[in-house]
Amino acid sequence: MAFKKRFTPRRKFCRFCADKDLPINYKRPDILRDFVTERGKIIARRITGTCAHHQRLLTTEIKRARQMALLFYTSTHSSDVLKKSSL
Image (cartoon, rainbow, N blue to C red; front, side, top):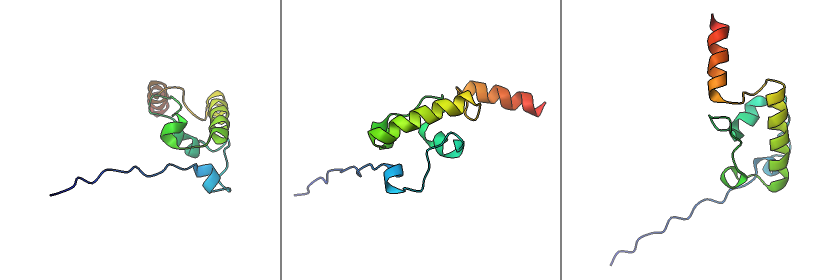
């Protein structure tokens, strides 16, 4: 008699709580891009695993980076900008 092994998902953890030296700053768009979808939406904390405190900080910093044009609002906007810059 074979028993089917149940899948147990790995527990999500906050990257910023685990690594205290990892800054949440609008000047670091490479880190912020991990928390934004291709369409430009901010990914929910239940998917990313960040804690509530750091999710609030992430949201404000992503919005600041968008305002400073370090992050794009949408993916179509980014492709238009890249096309114009290559001309």
